[in-house]
Amino acid sequence: MGKKVFDNNGILETCGSNMFLFISRVGRASLLGFVLSLFAVSVASAQNPNFVASKKANEVPVFDAVYPEDEFCATAGVGGLCAAEPVDVPEFDANFIYRFVAYEAQRPFDRFSWQAMVSLVWPYDGDGNPIDAGYRHPDAGYAWWETYRDKYSLFAGASAPDDQCRNDLPDGALLLSAFVQASGDVLIDQAGNFVLYETRVNDIAADYIRWNGLDSAAGRMAFAQSGQSVGFPILKLSAGAGTLTGDTANLLASDKTAFKPGAQMIKFAWRIMTDPADQERYYTKPARIAVAAKDAVDGRAKCLDVTVGMVGLHIVQRVKSGNGDRWIWSTFEHVDNAPLASNARRPNSIIANDLFPEGCLGPDKTDRDYVFYDGVDRADHLANQIVQSDLRWADEPPYARDPDGNRVTAPDIVRCWRLFSGTAEANFVWQRKLGDSVWKNYFLVGTQWIGNGGGAPFGVGEVPRFLSNVALESFIQHQMDGTCLGCHSTAFTDAGQPSNFTFLLDPGR
Image (cartoon, rainbow, N blue to C red; front, side):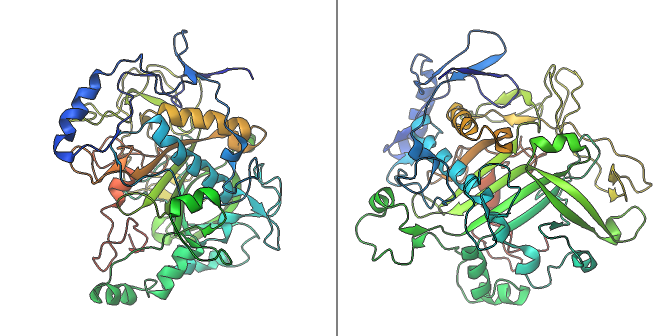
């Protein structure tokens, strides 16, 4: 099989001397000193025997790894891509302390992420049966994630801004309204349109919310006053799997169908597709945008029928293995989103008083167009700047306007964090497997998990320490708490109770 070289477009990462493995049983008291000594590790100690650094300037590692066919399916013995949902990472040993992202430790998590994404977008027919060619563009049927509940149907009073937009909603069309990120900021693409956001949960999470009365403000207050803690379900035995005996990890390894997934939450970032030529490169859906009167230039509520393309995706799933609260966080992006910052850091670069003292800076030059970067060559200019907060919707593209109806200048967005080299290799292998589909244009930014007890400088114990998605956390990537699990560890319900790593239980947020 031939080798492939990737351009230095911000998607991959070159080898560096601070990329190393640290999985140790050492005591925490002596940990920091040991960590600091590891910075002397030589690049000659290859962490990944399957990649060779390119000798040509402005190019990144060459990957020629070939994964076994079982790597691509969560059901043992299938051999190849499949619709099965992964339920856990059996290699994850909670007896170890994981401090830094490393090839051998990270690969099972990245496998979990890709399996989860493929299972979510795999289409089904009207009878709930998976369609064999599900990894291709889902022109027929519905994707599995479309069976998940959105907040409009899950929470009492969480209706769309204009319920009239539900009337005659085309079959298969999304109903969208949210265009504000978790940080409170809005993102506009270079075409001048808002990016939209959508959160959904699987039946396990939805049932937990409903059965505990967490679907209403009064119920969340009563739950908080009862003294119970919010704790979404972990994986459980499948029907007919018998009785769980022995070690869970051994059972997971020997019978991948013995369990059902635990609670899972997904969050999409969608761009509005105004150029039909672009749609061939995107996972697209018809959508109707419900615009509230207060958010419109003319002060009138409106329903806008558009086509949207996926630019970002978070997949968050609760599992049995591991440390902390046992969530695995996977995040994906489209390859056209944004370039790499000129001062981007590697994910193991955590021993620093100030990660980005100058902010995240634009590249010296770009050789392609990006959705969230204008491509103008301006060396080291400050990127990821928040746009004005008082923005409104127009009736036609470009939809993002100021209160007077004038077009708004889109911000330049760059990626502040390089990909871990092992994740880049996983992307190459999976994209090659998905090569005749739109999914070849998507990549795993990273998989984050709780690997240790946390504490400075290790955050809440998340590994890798920093992970963000330029379409979902555009403006906080450079911050010390600009990390998926770290940020969500601060989540509370609207009743003031810790909400187990989700802001979903504060629906008005």
